[in-house]
Structures are given as C-alpha cells and as structure tokens.
Image 1 (cartoon, rainbow, N blue to C red):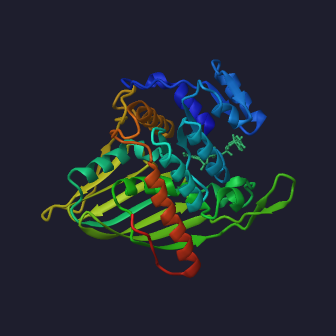
Image 2: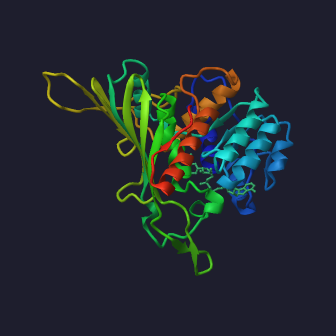
Image 3: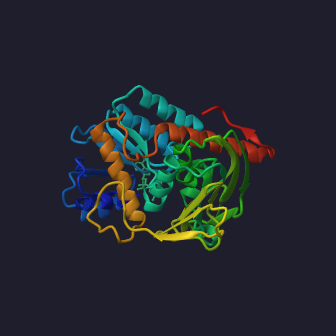
Length: 369
Ligand SMILES: NC(=O)c1ccc[n+]([C@@H]2O[C@H](COP(=O)([O-])OP(=O)(O)OC[C@H]3O[C@@H](n4cnc5c(N)ncnc54)[C@H](O)[C@@H]3O)[C@@H](O)[C@H]2O)c1
C-alpha cells in the first residue's frame, strides 16, 4: 500500500483546483529491500530509512501515511500523533478495540493534528451517488441494507502464509479487521450504527505453506457474515455485512445495496460503471434501471467525465480528501472526508461484538453510538 500511496502522489497533476500540493519527501520500510523501489521511482526522495523514528524527527515532514501490519498500528500511530505530524493511517486503526481507544485518546490530546483512516471505496462515483441519495431524497422506509467486500484469493489452500493470516499480527478479528472498515464506512457515515449484531465466522483453512517448506497454522477467521439490527431514518431494518476472503467468483468486490419502499439503489465494484436504481411506482413494472457512470469525482480531475474509474482513482481521491482536510483544518466539513476516528471506533465496537456473538452463538447488544 505504501507504493500505491506513492503512485497516487506521483500523478498528483491529475487533480485540479485543490490548494493542497503534497510532495513525497521521505519513506520508511521495515525491510531495507523494499526501499529500493522507492529510491528507483522517486528521484526527489530526500530520505529512505528503516527507522520510522527518523521520519518523526524530521521537521520537513508535515504528514505521514502509515501502512503497516495491524499489531504495529497502536505504537506507530500514537508516535506519529505525538510528534505533531498529521496522520493518514490504514485500517483497522488498531489491532483491537483497546488499541483503537489508545490511538483516539492520544488524538484527543492533540486537537490540531489531523488524524484520519483510509477508506477509498466510498470515493467510487457509484458509492458517492448512493451517499448523495441517502442525504437528499432518501429511500422511503428502508427495508434492508446489504454491504460487503469479497475476495477469492484464499480459496487456494496452497497460498503461502503471511501476516494477514496470523492472529498475532492481523488480530482476532481476522477477515473482519482486514475488510470491515471498508464495508462499514459508508453505512456508519449515513448513521446506520446498529443496536445489536449476530455474527457467524468461518475458519475454513487451518494451515498454509510457510517459507521453509513446512506448514504453518493459519488461525484467523476467513469469512464473516454479520446480521445487524439498525434503527435510523425513522426505519428499523436489517443490515447484512459480509467480509470474506474465501468467496468463489469474487476478485475484490465491494458492494452496497439499499432497498426502500420508495426507491432502491445498488452499486458494486464488479461493474464499476454501473449504478442500478429502482423507483417504486404502484402502476409501473418492478424494473431496475441501469445507468452508465463516468469519472464524476469528489475532487475535479483532468479525466473527462465520460471515462471509467478504478481502484487507483478512488484511492487518489481519498488521499486528496486527506490533503484537503490538512489544509482546511481538522474541523472543516468536506464534500466527503476520509473515515473519522469516531467511525473507526464504532467499527471496532461492531467487530468486537461480532466476535462475542459468534463465540456465544447469541445476539450481542452494542454500546450506544
Ligand atoms: N486500503 C486498502 O485497500 C488496503 C489494502 C491492503 C492493505 N491495507 C492495510 O495496509 C496496512 C499494510 O498492509 P499491506 O498489505 O500494505 O502490508 P505489506 O505486508 O505489504 O506491507 C507492510 C509494510 O510494513 C512495513 N513494516 C513492517 N514492520 C515495520 C517497522 N517496524 N517499521 C517500519 N515499517 C515496517 C514493511 O516493511 C512493509 O513495507 C494494513 O493496515 C492493511 O490492513 C489496506
């Protein structure tokens, strides 16, 4: 993800009419070998180091994008905030609820430091349209919300183990910690924090090949389905959330679907150009309408409006939102901002309740938002 971030900045001239002009001046990686790519591709790089403390001590650095394994989030995010540098941190923003609390507590002591969490999928034009409709005309009484992020890469039991498949580094949430913020960000932004959750978690692959010809335990949850009860917008409705690493037929599919009595809407990155809507008409047919989307973005780009968008575009838009926040200040209301600390906290509450729900085979209530 560090390279993804560097690439988003390298083509910043793509973004139009945004005061913020970020420049990547320094990088840190725990592995010396991975610094080579940055040195080769970023001729203006001032510093490439294996010690993140070097970045914190550098007065020429205003903000840090931090993308490291989950067990390192707490220590590094706290250190970045305490150094007074703005932080764009990767999800899940702490390996567990306790780690998240400590990061949030540190942030509350540094109110001028902008701290936000990565979540790029809501920057797809289709997701933005859903958000706009939810905030303007709505859907009538909401009947059901479904959201998910599905992969199939772990379907192969021969895929070697890595830190994301080991609890000590990835955390007890497993696939939920990896994918859950992506799924929950927009529902939480729209005010759909649930009252309770019933979760079913699946541990499908128990061991994977290691680097030395043996097998290593794979002790993380592979798939999760959460059934949540939401009371919002004058409606009570079920919200079904899926985070799955073993989902046949899915590459990296993020989707959100909302059904309402007056209108329904759905978008999936499987068909990034397509937005589907259905407006209920008592005399009309039950027919979904498909609309071709272009590259309508939150921040204006040089790409013509009729052209398509992808992962890298959504990610760059999200980075633009972070840079805009840094320039405009912590309290500024943006057209659409990165995930907030409160949103990361609510998502940790949900995932923690989901673990308890699965362990007890029970519905688990959530603390008030
Ligand atoms: N936004 C997204 O779509 C997305 C996608 C994948 C991963 N992520 C998140 O990004 C983060 C990293 O995931 P990844 O896939 O890039 O992992 P990765 O294993 O590819 O990269 C992790 C990086 O952390 C560095 N690192 C490890 N220990 C370090 C230390 N002590 N000091 C400095 N650097 C150290 C490693 O050198 C490596 O460069 C995680 O929080 C993950 O959830 C986000």
